Length: 258
Image 1: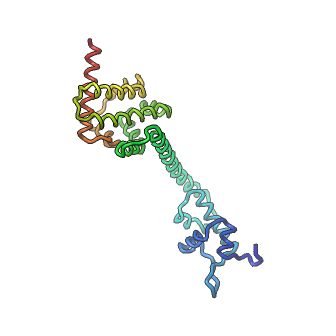
Image 2: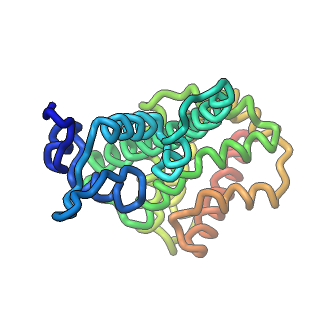
Image 3: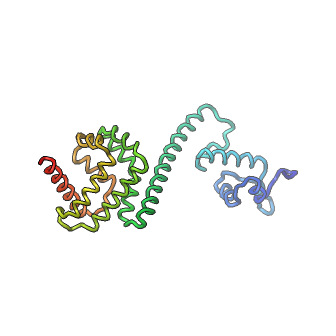
């Protein structure tokens, strides 16, 4: 430390690890304003500025914005009331952490699919990302329909189970694009539907399928769920796929009754 305990901006930056550019910005917004040399106008920092910067860095570490920091910066002390603000801030940070965790999981799922498939159509890729992004809204929808027990079971699925279903969905989208326009009773179309249905049933399990079958859900509510997670198919492709699935289910029912 110098004898007069003053620092140029370069010295202050080196001492604190805060860039000169950031110190300039803090000065501009009034967060940390050092005295100016009377003739040169150069910024001169002192020990009091060092303490102020420590408070700024500490509050930033707690996740506060610069605007919020400006409100607390010159408080001489903090009472127990500050705990309430910290608790509220902690709740907000927890929400951000959950969203970040969800984003990281989505990125890993997409990366793994791209490694496996090597290439995905943009409509399929962004449909998957949107599905990942809206999983919380889908869970809320399930809870509104009193299907919380089902979401709890789905939350217990392993990463491998989820990845397997993701792959099945990608395969379905590829084949729909290839086979669209063929008669729904075409063996290739029915084989496509069969493989996807079997993969879905394998993922869900017999117990969850039974519970879903017993659920009393209105058509408008189903439409709401479909709007939350948009399809990668055109309207015509989706209608054709729905018809193919209905035909498959009827055939399975006829076979089981014989």
